[in-house]
Image (cartoon, rainbow, N blue to C red):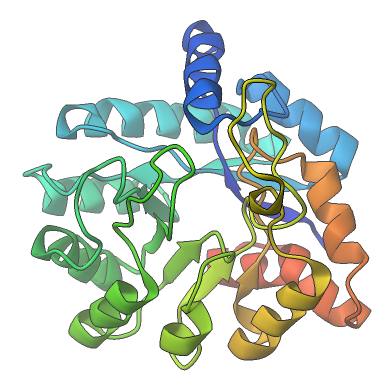
Amino acid sequence: MSMIIDMHTHIFPDKMAVAVIDKLSRTSKSVAFSDGTLSGLIEGMHSGGVDSSVILPVATNPHQVEKVNDASYNLNDKHFQEGILSFGCMHPDYENFLQELSRLKSNGFKGIKIHPVYQDTDIDDVKYLRIFERAAELDLIVVTHSGLDIGFPGVVRCSPKMLRHVVEEIGNFKLVAAHMNWEEAAKYLSDTQIYIDTAFSTGTITPRPDSTWRAEELVMLNAEKFVEMVEAFGVDRILFGTDSPWSAQSDSIEFIKALPINEEDKAKILGGNAVRLLGISK
């Protein structure tokens, strides 16, 4: 088996992690699988056999952008040899996005993360489109949250139809639509070059004791539905991700390994596609 790369993880500063995880857990009525710290992520990597984890920071307001990106640079500088690779962040209301994207590129970042729900902006809004144009010029990967966020029931800021509009406006660029468990993705996006990741999309959601989830809502993609998505998009555009700390890396890997597809395709999903997209050496 080739490298295993988790393309979708999150961490929080040690002094904030307990409070943040508790807040998000109460909002989503689901259980986290680690404590949300860097050490917790690395422990999960070791137990799951993950070679590298991509951290995706989110700026919830424009004033956070530079501070978060500075912290992400320090993560890469200090922990790259441990398999840690942090992306930068961007916010649609951040005015100096041209300069900041150039700074990220010059500092060796591979891409940025945006979150239309947390940033209260539709993915095809002009404020995002101008960011995507510059990211495409710089050959930066853009990862976006897609579909529903279980912490925001009923709120969709990035639908397959909206993403189709983005591609029609900008053209194809290195765009990853996170969370493949969402309706109409194949209908609108299978003929584009958009990547999708598997983060928080397989198995079942683990509810809190105070959860209001119905049993049928806890089930995400099963093996049959997963294979249907692979067939629609092509195996070369599927990226392994867990959304750690919200899914266990070891469980997510075992799900992929048990799929009724050939070993070469499993290796592409688990890491080969990410190696190519990130432009890194095996």
